[in-house]
Image (cartoon, rainbow, N blue to C red; front, side, top):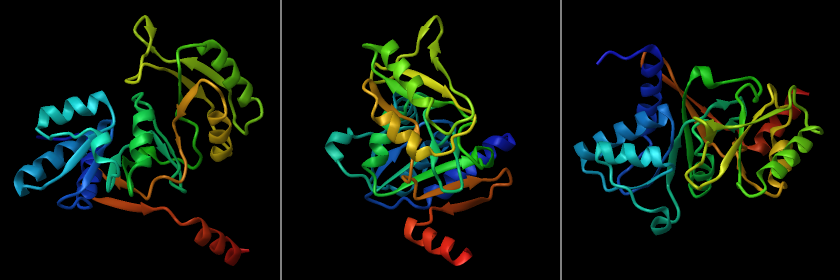
Length: 250
């Protein structure tokens, strides 16, 4: 099968992440086009090597894909802690902060990521940005009082270091999109997020906000696939080391 350059890059990232999986692991399966490659390749390796894995999906779409490729799933409630989760991202910056949720699975993705000893992101080079924000930031909200929550989110944005402040309700056909957990999604069109951590904290404080797509300090590494089949691994620098490095540069 001939792959487009984009698909070749996504497959390369997933193949590199596959090397981090060992027999007996509890593995979180992410959502999105690059994570889907990982699910397919993991199913092939499990079949070929007889790996004893317990896997958890982060969305109904990933659950369906796992069933299609013959990869058994276990409810996360039965597993508890996970050894590793491999997931995609809509954007990542040099500090490996992420925007996720383009597929509307951010809540389950963050729950699984938080339960994992390691979060590995697979992506193509086009997802890397100097500053987060070009991709709309998803915010999952409960349907009760959604218009009130939206106004509160809009009010929060007035004090944030961003370049735009447009908020839209994500639609699915003629009606609002409903997530796997029966919530709605607000997309924040911000263009640039100057302080992702501050925005994350402010959104967390809004009643009615269930979760947002800012994943701050959660990814251990981002694997960037290349169209030629190669991949490079970017690792997060610990905060203490980063401060030490800044001190040396001063």
